[in-house]
Image: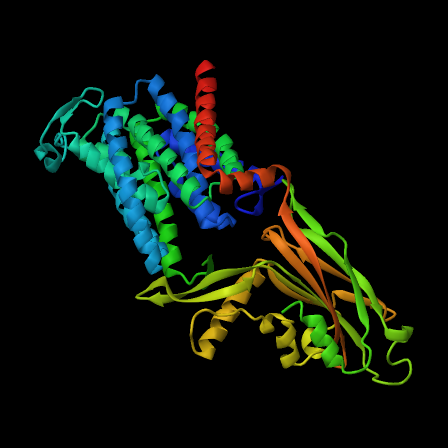
Length: 304
Length: 256
């Protein structure tokens, strides 16, 4: 079923796009990641211009995270207070990200920096999660004794002033820590066109030491607001949001997100983290390949 | 320059009265709607000889009559970047800017263009992918210019935006011609031109131009315009759509 995309200016198979949205939505409901790190590269592979892909993926991330937030909120899995602090940091961070974006584009090395950042982030986050989840699975199977109780949170986090109680997260920490985390993720959202869940979730678990039950819902809450802001920014500056493409992706992803959230409620969290680690590492390896493999197109054209 | 082509043809033809081309296009407007997946343009027409006599019939000249048709998309200013392996990574190295490169270029001819016109004439009329006047805006050595021109042409050939179709023009009895030109789905919108050239004995005897308007229609036109002209509203609608759809799915799932 071919459909013409008015802003991307090409014709695509609508069912392929809906299926892509469904797959990404499943992951987003299951792991609390927006899925931008999958949608954008996959759309580009399908032939959608990179700017349109990033801009439209942002609105798909918004939709998937709304239904994800609702699903988790029903289970009491969102820490609103923590979410608000993260959103404040994320908004400030995306402003800073826009400035870095312009700087890099002017030097013509935006693609390279984006790809290297992808590899570094996906690689390190994936390996960290893989190690932790394998250890947890071994403990759960009784093959290994549970490790000595870990520190609640990173010593740097504990050193920050103005502590505040985050009841749902079971934390008594300075709001500066989640604010800075939100800021860093906001920069990434603008640079990479991703929601940042794959950075946010591990940072909340291993850095802040949040109660795992609210991590996914709260991360989706932050992604919801930051991706909506990114969509608006794209509509105003690059004018590359394709509403038809976004709608197709959304139809698939909101359905997938519901299914994913249900599955996540039943599945064992350490297995979920293991699966996410594998997906993250695979995508990272794919991006690394584009950097070291001779590209199909040596030349690229951009409007000037 | 395109306007000058008929005048140049007259000069080239010398004092003898030149034949005239009467071209037509199957469609003067291509509407891009939701199901657009590329289209075929039929370019056809007649060759009118002065006095109704075909050259060659009275023993002069002797060569064959050929027709070439060029369909061009609107020219845009572009930058072409070239990747190179630096320290094991493929990174953008050199770049080259062109002030006006056609966004679409299709050449249909009755025989391979190189066998009916010499390189100089091809360059004058921009006939053939190796004869495009890309108007470089970057100063560079000729071999660098060549490399980038080949890169650009190769890239757009791969997506069907540039191509040559020798043999795609059929001439009947030396008087009527027709050419089929394929327009791919990812064609840019704007004002296209179809130029027809009558070629004989290595010279362009006549040329004619017809406009083709490629535009989005209906809903597609409305959406593309809204994105350009009412970007804030468009962005808000996009956000509202995504929040609304997500909300609806969450609500529906909660009720079950």
